[in-house]
Image 1 (tube, one colour):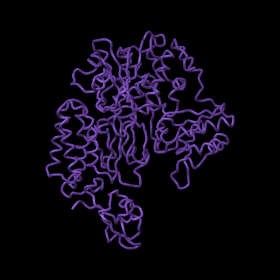
Image 2 (spheres, one colour):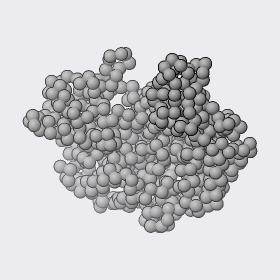
Image 3 (cartoon, one colour):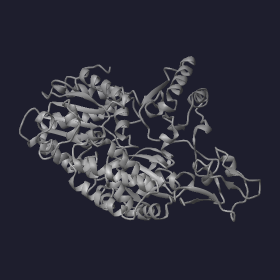
Image 4 (cartoon, rainbow, N blue to C red):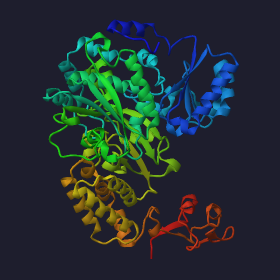
Length: 621
C-alpha cells in the first residue's frame, strides 16, 4: 500500500477515505516511543511485547506502533495503549508480561506503571489527564508519538498531503504566499522573520533555478526540537517544503541535517523514497504538472552552519563560513541563485496552515507572535522533555505546571532561553508571556526553542562562561570581533571563576560584549555575548561576589569554594559523613563534625544532604 502511485488528486482522496489503520474498532494499538526512548530500553520493551503477543496468538487483535517522541522524556520509556488512552511510564522488558495479561487481555491497569496522582496513593491512568500534556497545543507535534514515522499510510490517514493536494489544485502560488503571510507565522529558527514575507521576496527575485532549504542544523546545547520532528514525523516537513517550493517557483530542495542525528537521517531517507514512489514527490506531482525533488545533505556538526549563508556554503562543498549580507539568500543564495531557507519547525507548520486556514492559525498566540512554539525543557526541571504551547503562555506555567517545577524543591533561579545565542530570564520575570517581543525586552530571545532551567545551586558566572566557551570554540574565525573578542571575554570569565577577577572586569565584559554584538559578521558573533550580558544584567551581585569576596555562593566554582561545618547548627547526625565519597568528614554521632580541606573534593554532597543547613560555603581566603 505504501508504494501505491497516486496519479491524480482524486486518487489520493479516495485512498485516504479507504484507510482505517489507526482507528480500527476491533484492534488495540500499543504506541511505543521508539526514538529518544531507545536509549532507555524501548527496543527491549517493544521486542518483549511483540514476542508475548505472538506467543498468545493475538497479532490480529493487537498492533504495536513504533512511534516517535511523545515528549515526556523524564519518564522514558513511555507508551500509550489505545483506544483506552492508558499511559505507562518507566516501562521495562520485564513489564511486558503484566501489560499483556492485565491490560491487553483483561482491560485492567498495571498501577505501578502509571504516574502518581496529586493525592497520596492515587494514580493517573489516561494521558489526557496528565498535567504535562494538559496545557499543550500540538500543531508541529500533531503526529509525533501517534503514528509510525516510517509509514506513509499512517501520515496520509492523518490528513497527510491533503494540504499539498489543496495547494496544487486550488491555490495559485501568490495565494499560498498570502495565506502564509496572513497566518502571522514567523520563522521558528531564531530570528522570527515573517515567513510569508520571506517567501514573497524569493518568488519576486530574478534568476533561475530557485532553491528551497530546510535548516535542520540544530546545534544549541540542550535543544532537540527539530530532531524529534524529523524522527517522529518526517513527511510533515517534506510536505511543507513541496508547498514552499511551489509557492516561490522552486523545483529543488535540500534538507541540511546533522550527521549526529542518525535516526532522523534514516527516517527522512525512508520518507523521501516513499513520497517519490507514491507520486507525491518528483515529476508531475498528482498530475499537476509541478515537479519537485528533494535531497539530504548531512552536516558535520559545525554550530556556525546554523547561520544560513554558512549553511549554503557547506551545501556547495565549501567551508562553512558566513558571508556579508546583503545580498540575502532570497536574491543570491545557493550557487548564486534565489534561495529560501526555513527551519524544521517552520516547514512543519505549513501543511496545517494551508489545510485549516490562516485565520485558524492566527487565532492562537499573541498579536505579534502567532501560533504555537515547541520547546525542549532541560536542566533543573522535573519533567524534562519536549512541549508545544501557544505563544503568549507564561514562563511560570511552562516551568511549574507543564514542567513540574524544580527537583528537590529547590528555588528557580533562571531560564536560559535561546541557547548560546540567547539570554537568561530570571525569577522576577516568571509571569512574562513567552513571545518574540517580550523575550527581547528582557534580554533573551526565542531562538530555536531551547529552555535550560537553572536553580539556586547554579552559578550564573559559570553558566555564562560555559555558553561563551561553546560559541568561542564554534566561531569560524572569519571576522576579528568574534574570533578575538569572544576569546578575550572567555579569558576574563575564566579568571573570575578561578578567583583572579579584577574590579574593572565587569565593565570590560560589557564593553567587549556590546562591541562584538555591533561589529561581528554573522548571527553567531552578534549573539555570542548575550548570556554574559544578561547574567550581568540580572546577577551582577554574583560577579561582584566572585571578584571582591573570592567566593562562589552556589559552590559551583571549585577554586572559590570551601565547605565548612557551623558548630552552632551541626547536630552530629552523621548524614554528611556517610555521603562524603572521600572520607573528608569526621566526627562522632551527636557531636560536632569537621571537614578536612586537604581531602575535600568539593563535590557538594554534604551541602546538599544537610537538612540543618550546618554545612556552609566559604570563599577562598
